[in-house]
Image 1 (cartoon, one colour):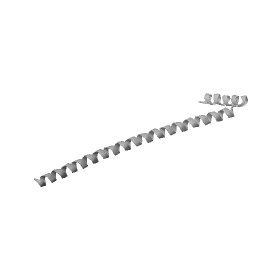
Image 2: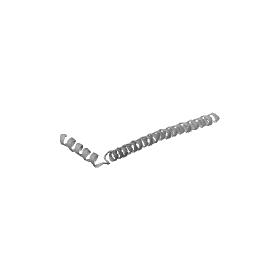
Image 3: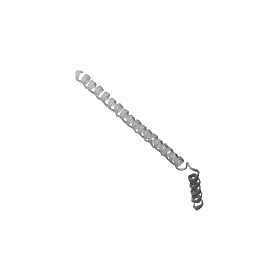
Image 4: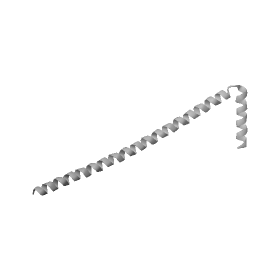
Length: 86
């Protein structure tokens, strides 16, 4: 009877270890998925910010280059000629 109790104790301990390992593995896998999702969201945000900065820089450059009326007229003429060619 003592041997049976020890065997039952060992079985219960092994079952608890197995369940704990399964839960831990699932938690790690879930955490890795969440980390990857947050990484992708951060990368998308960075790409969007870079795109916005590029547009702002281009806008400022164009404003500076087209500050005079002559430059503005010349640029408009170039664009209309380019549109006619397409």
